[in-house]
Each structure stands twice: as C-alpha cells, then as structure tokens.
Image (cartoon, rainbow, N blue to C red; front, side):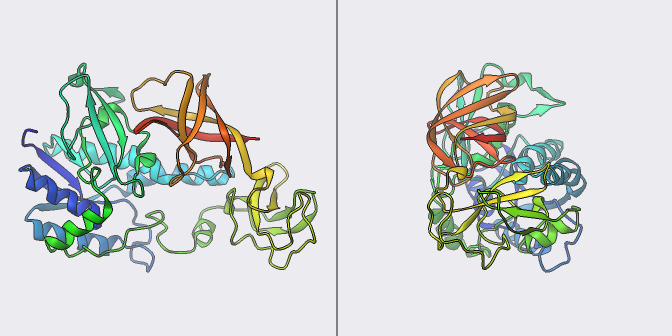
Length: 392
C-alpha cells in the first residue's frame, strides 16, 4: 500500500493508540485527532472526556505524532443526541453508537480530516474493509469511501468496498458500523481489525504505551457511568402508569415508559411481587422481564421467565434502511443480529416499500424497537435498519 497521510481518531483508548502505531510502522504520515462530542457536563465525575484527551496526548507524545483537539459537540447534539431523545420519548430504545459512527466519526470527522489533506482516516474499531472489483487491498489497513453532499465520489470508479467483521469474534464491531457506505469505507482504515484484542494489548505493553492497561470504555459517551435513569430524567418528561402482568393484573407502577427496554430484568421496581404460578406455568422464583409497552394506555407489561412467549419473536420489521453497497440484497436467505454480541441467526429477508422483514428459523429473544437489525452474508456486513416491530 502506498504511503499516505492518515488521520487517526485517538480516543484515549488502547485500540486507537495501537492503530496509530501500526500505521506509523507501515510508513504512513500519521496525525492524531481527539474528538470531543459532549460538553454539557464534561467536568463532572461521570464524563471522562478530559481524562481521555490527556491519555490521547500522552500516546501521541510516545509515538511522536501531532494531535489536534476538535470539538464536534454541536454536530453530535444535532445529529445524534436529538434523535436519541426522540426515540426514547416514543418508547423505543435507540442505539446512539450506530448514529454516532454514521454522522460524526465517518462524516464530520472525515470531512475535517480531508480538509487537513488526509488521504485516509483510521479508527480503532474491530472491523475490516475489503476492496472488490479492483486492486485487492492488503492486510489490516484496507480502504473505504465517503459521500460528499450526499453523493458518492466518482473517483471510486468501478472499485467497490465491503465491510467485514473483525477477526476477533469477541470484539467484532461491524454491528455498530453497518450504516457506513462504500464511499466512506474507501477512505477508512481499521488497523486492529485483523488482530485479537489480546495481541493489541500485547503490542501496547511492548512499545510502552501509557494506556496499555486502560479498561475498555463502556456505555454511551455522554452518559458515562452515571445511572441511566437519572440522566434521562434531565431531558424527558414522563408520566407514571401501571405495570401489568401477562394476565392483565396490576403488579406495580412504572416511572415512565421511556425508562424501560424490552428484556430488561433489573430496576423494574416490583420487588416483593410473587405468584404461586405464572399464566404460562412459571415458578414463583423465576425473574420478571419487561415484555411490552402500550404507549397509548401508558402501560408496561412484564412476564415471568426468560423463555416466556411474549419475549420470543420469529419475525421483525425494520425501516430507516442503509445498505453498504447502496442497494438491497436479494430476497432470500441471510443471517442477522438484532443486538450486539448476539450470534448470527439464520433468517429470510423480504423487501417492501422502504422496509424489510426478517423471518427467523429460530425465535429471537427480546427483539427491541429502536435497536438495529444488521444483516450479514458470512463475514460481510451488508447493512441493516431500525427495528420497528417484533412479531411472534
């Protein structure tokens, strides 16, 4: 691969740090950028933005590369956070990481990097890009493309690009990247996508990176480690209402439907509720799960037992569709995930009027409106959509 100017998103974590190191070892001109995406309370105990920047700057110093601090907070609030709140207000459970990748990391960040004269950008995601119908891309640093003003660049030509799973099955992040286009992928490198996480940690320790043992970040960047309900309560007005079981009996009071997600087990707030037998024959000791939300009646339904029929779906419908190749796959057999870290599940896809339906061979657990249904053909991530409804 020709030596290029590559702008790396340095998050302060070990994955992006090792990505920058690998690119420099390959002889590229590497520039680091730290993206600040949230600033409402970045001096609080829950927001680690300032600490992360210090860690990113320390990595840049060790590697001998420049680093720039760029504030995308306004873009994030408009493009990601506003949609996040709208979805929760509607009773769905959105995935802001998916939107952040599509709107910030591979749009706003990519635009900024190109203004710096970058030929590629790189991040620490565990995914890969494959160039097809053109020169074969090599190794961990493979390319990707981007839309400019909503149009794909003509310089991609006949060559196309595929999004592949990361080789470490425990860390694969293609699920969160499924809304990227082949144009964005033509400008993107994922240097650690070919590596297991254990090897990334080993490299970081071997070259003396200051964040070699830093814990992986969890959760959503603007929420941090704070209680989720406490955070949402600052932005959403919610009306309490009844909690009912699968026989329609009131068993408690919810604090607002936005605060619950399908499949939720903890924090429902019905401590002490017991029945000798549930409607489906469950034991009194089986845990309760959130199973349905009735927005019109402001009622939350819960059921006992992980395998309760209300928690299992053979079919789902998704809209707000995005396909990496720019066109939908043919109707027929594919595989899909309805949540991150789920194994691929065999299903059939059928398209109709801007949405698709997936019919699974085996029922899927707690299929949740607002989450992403991501479609695969083997190791290739084809794209996906936002789940609107699960069906038994």
